[in-house]
Length: 127
Image (cartoon, rainbow, N blue to C red; front, side, top):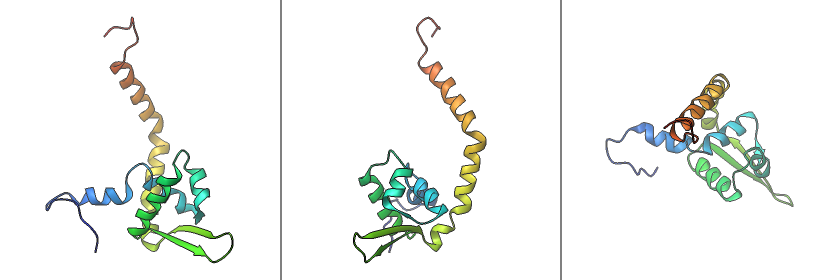
């Protein structure tokens, strides 16, 4: 049975975001949506993720039923990660986020630049 750390009545969206959110989990799902991959292939695509963080996040996604880890009995050992059937259901959502990024990333960067200028004005530019 899944472990729940939220008080009774907490928003279920919080639990869902713990499963697929964060800095790396969505990226892992995005990378595996294309095709199954080996650990180092994922790590190279996701630089600057550390080996420890990637392993930790893959284990969490495996625990949540979204990622399948398959180890092949060969030397050297071959391990391949892929999305499970449940993980595959996230592809349309990941594709929408990717589309949103394509359409809006420039606007987000512009907003960040404007905000940063107002929060950290250069000397002589007023306060």
